[in-house]
Image 1 (cartoon, helix red, strand yellow):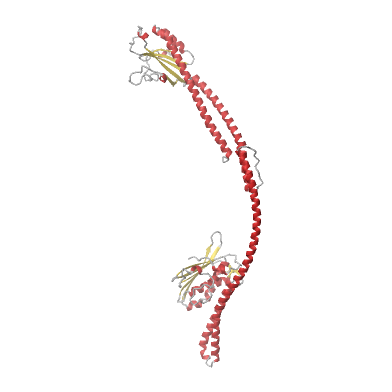
Image 2 (cartoon, helix red, strand yellow):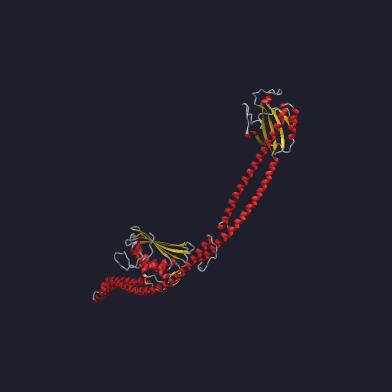
Length: 550
């Protein structure tokens, strides 16, 4: 509520009015109080002067009874608290309070300190504010005290009743005490009336300011806010109906003109958008046609390149098979062919190996092109690993490789294509075996891991070897198709590309860590429950496979 402009303006006006009226009230009360006190002082001065003049003749004639009667009569007037006359020694000669006549007043009393201060000589002349004092009476109301020195005039020193020498300046002091109770009561009443008037005046000013702010600020500003919200919501037909000639009115007119300009700009933008969409559709159609032609050309070019590579790779083993076949046929035609059974068996084994290599090349090409069917079922991953290890068992024995396997006992069933997973594990194991031509240690482990971010469990197959390792510069290209680092160039470099494609289709990942001269570790991880991707990954996508973790 306080965040609105009208409320802030009202609060500001109220605070300024309150401060101004409060200060004005305080000043008026203060000035009135000072005026009343000055009036009381003037009254006390008149009473003191009248009393001094009235008793002068009686004092010159030494008529003490007359002086006492005058003091008593004057002191009986309303508002006069007490009248006393001191001699030069501080003894009370005359007083309206008969009980204190003859008493000596302490010079350290409030009434005497104006002339007497400590042991210093008393002042002979006292004027101005030093003649008055204000103090609290016994019953708690304020009292104004006025002291008037009685000076030793020439007429006084010639009278025989006075024993003061002519050089003494002061004969005594006339002390008049006037009650300020009536003034204080009147001042309090006036203050209450003035404060009440100030309250109603402030209330009237605040009400007037509030109504003014509501009519000329709050309502127009609210209208402007509604207008801006309508414009922000796209209603460019909204107009503000403020007819004021003030700045708010000019602002409303400017707003309406802005809304008209925005409506026109919006209309033009829609028209331009429609035109642009038509042009984009035409260009898109043209680009699609060009892209289709380009894609067809690229497919033909890729097919030609692939055909050349496949023809070359398959031609080599087929040439060997043909050569060995001719040799076997000649040996069998020779009369000594039976004696060469051992050599014939060697040739037949070579033929078998080259024929198997042709089959692997074709199998990798089919897997790479994603032409094989997908058969998804719940499978025991440990069983797949055991079967794959059995298939390469003879290679491990021939190359003197020590196998260590740690298969997790709590492995869950995995939803996957068992044949493809086995193909991926087989390719990784073959790479590890080929990296340890002179023997080494092969470690295969499986384990279950919990997925993060609400994913289900995963399973991992880790294959570690102590082979030659992979150079750092080769790591980024490890999963590229047709890329191989084998010195004898056997195969077409599709093994790891096939692994990458199979794992990606199972929504998994492949991580590789390697150190030259110390070995390589492959980690293949797939989720237990995965939605197997049915789409094919084009060769270009596989060629720019994700960077492996080093």
